[in-house]
Length: 527
Image (tube, rainbow, N blue to C red; front, side):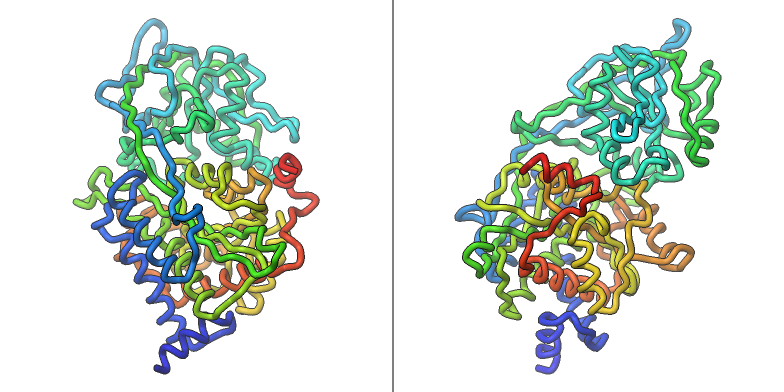
């Protein structure tokens, strides 16, 4: 009985509670992850039976938490996908130089993209710096040399002299592809900067045959042309005879010097063979209706993604990408926060949507579909997104992406202060994390948003744990139920997010972009 009372108090207040209580609440959170990241669900890939089982589980939990259906009379918003599977055995990639054709070893030297519609490509190569066009900064990698009819080769990243959010937006796959197409390029080859690679090349190579997906609805159709990713350790194969080397280019990038732009001596020749299939999936949507007659037509979204990578090439006998932290952790928090609001009989003025989306790992597709075609009628005023927040150590610092972009930053500072947690801004804006998860689907519709990571101090043991997780577990089979997680810290995070959700849903005014925020332009475009 004492444990039950302690948990109720914990759920209903963000004040500190005994460590044993936090741990007990953390165990309740972990219990959901044990279901969602179980081998039986085979990595929750979009369109799989495992994903459908996970979605059924979330629906059951949201019902039990007292949420109403958020997609009309149902908890599910159907989302149709086109599944694109690369036939690597039937595909070829070569470099042609001085009349000689040199086959490229797929997996070792390069990874062949399957998203473009072009089956055959034969084109000259041009090194185009970072491959960016940022009009606001007067920066354009794509104006010279001429890219018309060429494949652009570029180094992933961007010039540090340009502010992180501005650079991040134009570094997105969608914006870069749009700019290259406008410049006349017929495709692109990306070279990762080893200093910024979240996933080592060997693991990227192991995962290369996993199917890609696009939204089946023609209204969402995009075609970036031919794409490939080149192993930076083998990139000098591209630069032979050009007078430049990958070492020179990486040194310029690492020391913030301008990158060169030049035509390469080789042409690329490629044949891309792929299979297309239709796949059905769904977003799971639960609704907690607001109590205010007017404000209940404004919606605060709490979101997390339900999908992961499914089954891939075995690593030490394990082929299942369980996605315990990415993002069963966020979905578990979604459920626990919904339960907490019910247990505490919380009534907020605005309505709250609890959204578990599909297709994040395919390019934020499920959230993009929902943002474009919401299942609720009214105005979405905020998105609070939980994707891989990584409770790997005690919660002393909380890193908030988007902290200084909107009034939501002031809200998270206020509720974290009550909990004794220090807020940090994004320490690695060059990693583009603010545009790499589902919050960006809402930001592009003008909706203020936040995302989170457990914070750390540079040089600390926590930083070492954080970086080791990315290197060894991110998008790997070891993101499973055997990894060490701080359960008490996860429960504390959930309590802070619950308090944030209540504060935003009850505020007299809806969240607003700061006047100097880059992202404010999206709100203006939708006014």
